[in-house]
Length: 102
Image 1 (cartoon, rainbow, N blue to C red):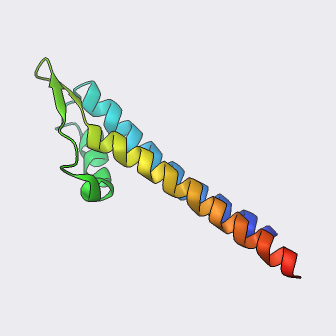
Image 2 (cartoon, rainbow, N blue to C red):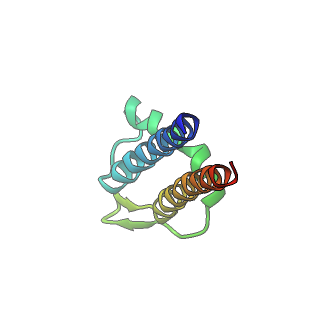
């Protein structure tokens, strides 16, 4: 049981970091953060590999020429959240089946 809890905890940490990076990106884009700022550049560079599978699915909407609603990033955030949920459910389900057999 401790191993399963550790695995679920590890999954939650990884998904949480992904959510944090994507969430910060969404907020920075939404408020039109300056891309030349080091922190903003780091967030965009770090989040780019996470967004590659979702690029081009939805168009980004630009408001007042500065504020961007990046629907691909929002969609990626939701998909990674679902992946985390399903992985933890899968691990928990395997643990239950394993314990029933013993």
